[in-house]
Length: 597
Image 1: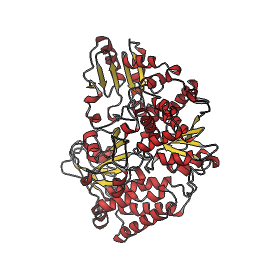
Image 2: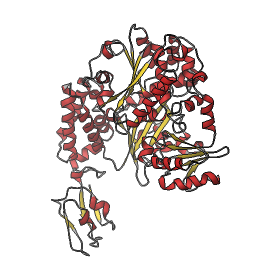
Image 3: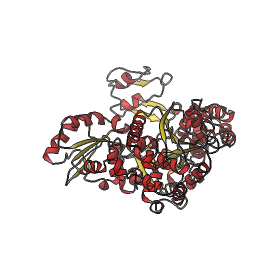
Image 4: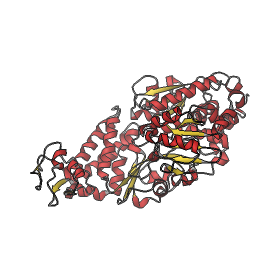
């Protein structure tokens, strides 16, 4: 077996990482915040520094992020936009930090990282995702080398010893899947499932954009352990940067003879990998629907059995693992099952990548040991909810997940506990909710998403989600009765029990969990026709008070001309014409408009 050093210039990678270096985070979150012009301006300055585009460091709230490294200093800059590039360039020659942008002199000083354990995100935001030399210099391909030194059976045993569970949502033991496939003979396929469609979730995208070689190394190890010769990365076409980054990394691996025939000189070990783009259907995250999509068919889920390991792509045995799962495989084979198993809970070892979104001061991508209390994630890492608001709860698991109230924030982040509370781990989205959120409207939002994404194959999901959405809209419009509340519970349970696949079976979870923990809000919507959070439009009234000075600004911003009055005189709102858009309330400079729910 060849040594990695024979194929890759590891020393060049070490020199790049240890020398004078400027990094700019240009993953999707960085680019959307304006990082690309910052990068280009610094690159054109031609300083005596390597200017490196890197991936996402997780601190999405601080993008664009720039770091400056010298022999003696390290600076982390936040919100470093194009207009700040000149100051950063000047500081390089002066060897002084730009104080107005400076966040810390090391990542360890930043509260956001204090309670994280970055096992699979350790390179994110640090290495150039297109540099195989930097990846190898950071310990890359050590896991592959260790795997090829032993037998496929021993590799599977190490994954079993590490107690790795699938990170796609269900938490199925990875080694068990691999054992099923390894027993099969003939052509076998491996699929890396990167099709995440949950609102507020972008873990797979982050890994593929920021550290593609880690995911690909995990795929190569998985292929070796299970005997696969053909593999696909399946992701959605809405992820153009992740797709192009993965494709470039795959091309590099072929050039370095780490894909194709006789990988690392191991005779007979062959693997080909391609990227397959899906059209963005949420249901294609389900294994059987995903396989139909890869084959060029409509993304319909299929009854199981047969399971993919028995009959998968084009009728051949197939193993499907999530992006995160395969990244963990790389870590386990590199650092050992014993090291890996020291993190996490008894039933679920290791860490989980979580996307923090919603009403949170520090939104972003984090990695924490499984079992970390939700309160640590929300407060210590996420910085809590915005000032002058109160935490109401968190929504875990996306459209198939559920809401957990603030009083249960001691709950550990693990598969079993979340499921007991009516939520799920899911792919890893955690939406933080405060007292400005209406829980009935939250359930309506997710049900609307699920209804739109239903493939329509089975009646319980196709018709059931439509009727559930209608009932929720009736409640939020102030037109529901107590009978509707009984009806929505009964129909939710029917959809859970009778739907064909996981999308339909879990679709009512947001309804059932909010009804369980926030029943009072449903009652107020039905009995009192009020929405405490002031979210449900048809239950809101805007009134101009005596504080009005007659400036006329409210009338100018009203899209339906529902406000009238003379300049310097109190204005009035025509309630029949008002569409409850809130523009007048948000634009009043004198706080002279009341919002009554």
